[in-house]
Structure formats: structure tokens, C-alpha cells
Length: 516
Image (cartoon, rainbow, N blue to C red; front, side):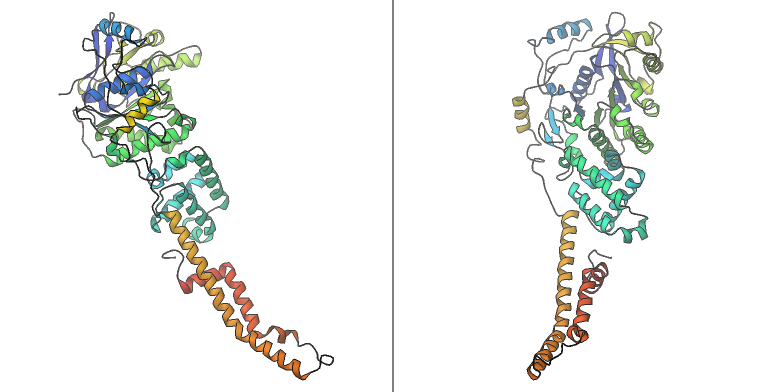
């Protein structure tokens, strides 16, 4: 039987329980607040609450602190003693230490099981955002994906896309007749961006075996939801890659999961930490896509919770869809800060007992103003809330503990070894090798055609030499020296070495690409 998730104690004496209604947990949420105000602990207790109710969770561990979810808390921890006092203060009578089922993931395969997707699954829109391409460059990337589809060229990893772009550059004139201008400069710019991406370690992201979404939606033998933790401390060094990967994951969930309406509890809860990275300098097309996903993915049973320092980091159209909110303290040192604080306060349903704007400014560490959806999806009245303490360990676990958990994980061995099956790179290389062999064969045929004429000329020259003395002989005319056959052979060979010759060879001996 599902229960609402206890968040903390509200009211003047913190004795009034504040709960997140799990039946409305797929209506999305927001955790906001300045650095050091307690957002990470709020994220930790929400992950615990969902897991306890059998709801799988996906979250990114930006600071490296959330691995403690896999380990039970302890009285020996310097903060867990005060946590037991806080639990008593807010009436959290069921408070107990405990560990939760955790699976560690890592795009770089160091602190968790490798996470991969294919270039095709990422798609041209997200790749263009990841590479910060111009409109013209994005157009060429779309051409590349179209050619790959039409010619049966699987785009699995970065070298597949790089090889296809080389082919597109070499065949720009032919492609321009069908798709429009293909600039060599734009192709080169995309290749340079791919090189930068590769240097950031993105080559590890693209390839096979690709992540199966079902592996993110598991429960353990006790029926608790598995908490999937993505190691993001190193990934934050490439913020575009971080934001694009999480958006891709959301898009894949949206595309693959069936409609379920309003379930009794979510099928998955997705926490998007450092959410401002998703919207910084993002083109309108991308923001529109995020809005669409946020609006419709709840009907797939997925709840999305954005974590950021300031609600103003999230566009208004998306912010309006975030019904469950935990707002930690905001600083207001400048006129702009005060304006953003006032705007944040105006998004809550007023409580006559206190001023919301003042409360957001004054709440201490581990305290917040909260508002959760009530029956029929009505926003609850804003309340000052003392956040409940986590049951799991506060802070990171050791490397040895992490490695031990990864060794016994159900995902151990499934994604560790990279596969490299035949794809666009291998197909294009094979076709190019075949074309080169055909050109060489045609050149040999042309030389064979020229050989009899050369042989006749040499024989005639030897015969003439026998009948005429060296002193009275005259050198044969230049035309006779070359011979008609030799001249033709040289023309044929020269032509075969050129562009037109290559086309002739393709026409006679078979096309380089099917249908072309």
C-alpha cells in the first residue's frame, strides 16, 4: 500500500506534518535555493521516500555526496546526532537509519557502470545543441542523418558520423542538387566540434551496448525502487554534454513509455540537478522541446524534479508546470536579487500566518518554504517547513564500498565491454576500398589495350635500325615515336585517374553506393 512521502514539520512549532502526495508526484516539482542551504539533503530524503514506496529514481550526483544513499546512517556521524533531535522535534516517530538499493552509472565508466547511447538515438537536434552548431551547420547534420537512413548506414559512434561527414564533403556537388548547398567550410566546422567533444570524453557516451531504459526502472526483492545515481562530478567539466545527455534521457522516456494517465504512484522519478545548464543559451527550439516533454511525460507516469539555485533559472512556461515545490533560502543583496525573490514568492499560494517573501529570505539551513499538490491537483498553502533528516548516510561512501556494490550489482558485466559491430565507418571504408580496387583494375585494362601498339612501334624501330647505318639514319618523326595506340592509352589512363574516370568506373563496374 502506498503512502504519502513525509517531507518535514511545518507550522509555528514544526509539529504539522508536510507530505508530498504520491498520487500527484508525477506532476513534477522544483527544489531551489542558494548554495549551502540544504538542497542536497532535500534531494536525498525525496529519493529515499520514493524508493521506499517502490518508485525507481534517477538522479545525478553533481557533488559526489549522494552515494551515501547506499549506506545506512549512524549515530557516530557528527550530524546524525542532531538529526535524531530534529526527528523528535518534527514528530518523525518512524525515523530509523537504513540503506537503499542503489545502482551507480558513469558516462566515463569509472565510478559506475558505463552509460551509452548511439549517435542515431541522440538525433540531429540534440547533437546540434551539444555541438553549438549554427543554422547552416545544423542543416548539414540533418543531411547526414537523412543520407544515413536512405543508404542504410548505421550511426553508432563518433567515428561513424565523422566518416559520413567526410563522404558528404567529397560528394558535396551531387548532394547539393538534392538537398541544397553543402559547404566544405561548414562540414569542416562540424568535424572540429566533434574533435573537441571527443577530447572531452564524449566518445565514451556514443556506442553500444546502448542503455536499456528498463534498467533504470527496477525494484529490489523487497519491492523498493532502485535509486540510479549518475556520477556527474567529472561530467560537470563538460556542462553541455551533461545537460544534453539528461535531456536525451528524458526524451527517450517520453518516446518509449506507454500512456498511463494518472497512476497511483509514478513509474519513475527523474531529478535534473543544475537545471540552469539546460536553459543557458539554449535555442528556442530546444526550450520548446523541454516544455513539450515536461507537459506530456507526466501522462507516461514520470515525474521530473528540477534542482537549481533560483526559480528564475527555469523558463516561466516550464516553471508553471512544477506543482510540488521546496524553496530553500534565497539571498537578496542586489535590486535584481530582490526582484527575483519577490517573483519566487508570488508563485506560491499565500499563507496568512506569514509573509512568503520574508520567509524565503529568512529560513535557515535545512529549512524551507514548501507547497505540495493536494486533492484534485490544487496547490497547497505555502508553509515554513523543517526538512526531515535522511535515514541513509550523509556524504559520500568510500571508493572500496562503491566498488563492492558495483561488483554485486545486477548490471555488472552487462555494459562493461564495448561492442563495435559493423556500422557506417566500416561500410564506407569497405566501399572505398572496393572502388579503389575497381579503379586499379580499370587502369590495368587500359594499359593492356595500349601494349600491342607500343610493341608494334618498338618492332618497327628495331627493323629500321638493322637496314640503315647509324650515320645516315634519321630519327623517326615524333608522331611515329608515340604511336596512335600509345597516345590513346595515355589519355585513357589520365582520365581514369580523374573525377570523370572514377564515375566511368562506377558506371561500368558497379556503383560505390547503392542506388547512386
